[in-house]
Length: 400
Ligand code: GLU
Image (cartoon, rainbow, N blue to C red; front, side, top):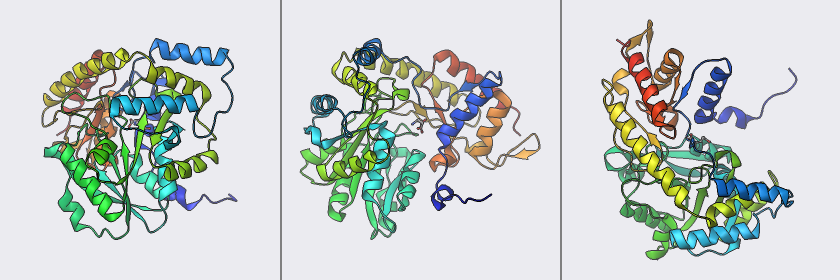
């Protein structure tokens, strides 16, 4: 071997969500009947009018590079959406279109953070947040949330930490993996703290349209309504709202100097988001929104059923998530118990046991900084959910 991998490869953890997708796909290709309750990906096809716009884009030759920051027409459509739906006014220069919101989040960390910086990440967190921070050479500062208060931040935990090196904070409401939706008071409190201490607030709002209980409001809207003046970068995805995960289209909105810096970094990695996806994005944001409501209503039915079925499992406790499409039941009653002569020492081992013995893929909560919990996605049909949880029930009955 005459090469050595870079330190960052060793420093960064793999994406546990994508790892489970790969495991499930591999098992399926070997003919195993896998039930995939792991990935956060709607099972619906992308709505007709969006697919049609993409086909027309290809036929009309929109198959070339676009402006690195995103097509102007698309950025105008995004500004219009942010104004109408979120009550925030922006100009196209405030917007960066990326290959999925994930790239916007990665870019913003690259644009803002350096070695010796710390960035607040709330646990349970989406698996990629701490890794985006690590890939920018900064260090995630993990802060607990309160499970009995919709997973809002525990400000007491934050107060106990040395905050001198903190440069930013990443929030995500509705949350992946908990589905928790923060109340306005907590968001305002965080914004005030951020303003006072010069932290940039990165607000991942990819589940903004998947809200069943409670109320969603954009962080930047509260920042403006209350004249707080914090620096906020809002990151939004088309993947979840319009069932467009494979198109890889998302965007960021925020202060022009930060957007420009992110754009510069993106220009040296992927140039621009794909042109066909951007044309599809215009159709998604400007077209009929009834598809969004229909999908949301279906997710709501699935959520209610999944939570009921999970609570029927012995020793499992599942709270009702207010948004997104994940349940996050507590399986801690199974930790340190034995099955097939093996001790289940954490949720990695419980998820692995469930996958190997019943072919149901889930995501272990330890990967989200939440030991004892397991994430189940209900972005799949009622029938698959029922079958999957029946198999999990069977698997649990063998644990002693
Ligand atoms: N956000 C989704 C999930 O958590 C998609 C996979 C990923 O990129 O992590 O399942």
